Amino acid sequence: MKKALFFTILALTTFSSLSAKTKLTVKNTVGGDRDQVGDYDLFSHTKESDINGETQSNSGYSFGDRFQIDLESDYLTGRFRLESIFQNVDSSLSKVIFAPSGFVHFTPLPQLGIIAGNNFYKYFAIPSAYLAAADDTTKYGRLLTDSLGEEGYFGNDSLSVFTNGFAGGITSDWAFSNGIYAKFASGGTFYPATNEFEKAIDFGANSGLENLFDLGFTAHNITEDDRKFGAFLGYTGNTNLIANLGFYYNFTTSDYLPEERVTGSDDDDNDVYKYKKQSTKYALGLSGGYKFEEAGLGIYGDLITGLTNEYIGTIKYYDTNGNLIDSQTATIARGDTIVKYYYNKKGTKAKSRNDKFTHAGIPLYAQIRLIYTFSKSFEGSFSFKIRTLMNANDTTWITLYPRVKVDVGNNGSIGAGLRFDMNAARYDGLSGISIPLTYTYKFKKKF
Image 1 (cartoon, rainbow, N blue to C red):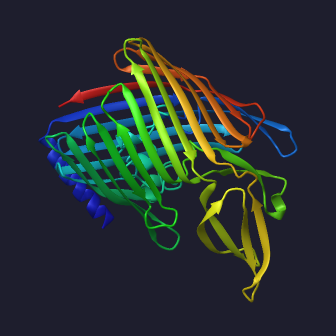
Image 2 (image 1 turned 30 degrees about the vertical axis):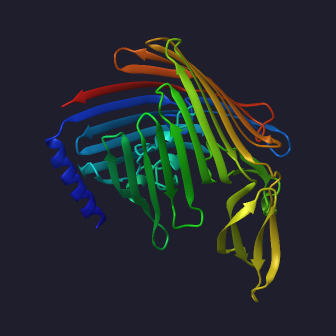
């Protein structure tokens, strides 16, 4: 069934695209930059303190190639991307990855579209969900996405995207003569689990009035207890001005929230530090900025803050042998004790295990980015990013990142910088320095 649907869509899209105006864009990026290619920069050196206060240092490098083809026509939009990456970041992690990904979006009518693939990227991004300083739109701000987003299914293992899952959906796009527009999308992510085929269902809506405002709403993985929602509003009356407001439910994006150091709870790892990714049940986001064209200067800022110290977590239940017998998703107050129960043969509680979260703080992300255009071919930027739990200094992560971009020839560019990380959770002081470096070539052709 899955193969039949795929080849039917492929045949229809290929036939329709032959008679339509087509634009082909080929883009290739080579090097190492965790914002573009791979999970690490070209070279990185990090420090970390163990539980005894001893410093551990690691150096590593990552080098890869991202080859991408984008196709646009009256009826067809598609992307194919192949990432080939070699990573050697420490003695325990050295691997080569070949990760193909992409999608095909067929629109036989302006108001009807069919999409299938394993990664929709930011194709369905809501304009008012844009984070100007981060230059990003999180999955909360996309109408349709591979909502599970698990590495095991989408992206970090060679060929896993062919064997472990796919996403698909239906889209609708409306434009009216008075400047009002509306977009809708509904679909799901499907992947094989241990005993059955599992799924995550998404939908989203985006509407607005051109040159005035943009409004969007998303709901991801809506059939599960850890469902996620996003609501966004933005002003679009000035092309140089960005002013966006967002509300998030079950915000878990690790790029914008800190990790907290906790001690192990098992008897055999009490002397080992672990790092728990943070989340927050309710969050409010602000993003804004302005581009001064005559001065060649752009100033942008983001802020995302939790509204309470609660988050959505999992409580696990074990039998007397330590085997997991049940798990429940629940709202948990940060700073409380999470209890994992052991049961005896009669079903009564025999023993409890406490995992104590040290801080009751509320997670916060803030970033400022400055861009200055020196000439048509030379641009510089500087960003300051902080992720922390308020009232908890030892959970603070700070990144300073100066970067330059230089155009080379008509279609190429070189990007390079220095990334400084100060991470109080892992090391008291400068915890890492890395060098991102990439060369990008882009070619466009209209038929």
